Length: 168
Picture 1: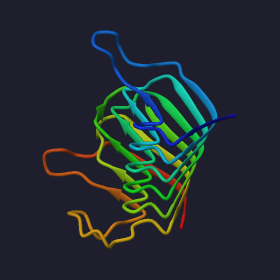
Picture 2: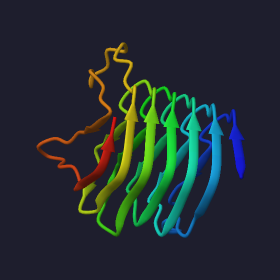
Picture 3: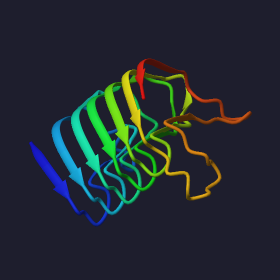
């Protein structure tokens, strides 16, 4: 059981180093994050990892921000009252699969979940609860905001997304 509160940047951050390869093999369990100055959890190219029971509250940016994810599992986690999205997934990936089980959002100012990731890695949700996200008063380029937004373009097709057991 760990708490990370009121950080001056991201609360928990993994990234690919210069020539050192992808971060891998993390197991994070029972983590509470309150009021980070940037993102609650920020991971780039994370693979072969398990993230379980993580709560992110009141981040100045996104609750969870994942880029180019490899085979990783996120379970039993929540993102609430964040200034941007609760969960944001982008980048490109073609290895493994990103599985999200038992995830919920509540009162994030923009989309509860926003996916613009490209590539062939399937993003799978099983048990997704989206509540009261998207204040819809900011007037940004994507308003109105949604519980879940899957956003691509003619030149950037979104990776496969599978959602089962969706609740609102």
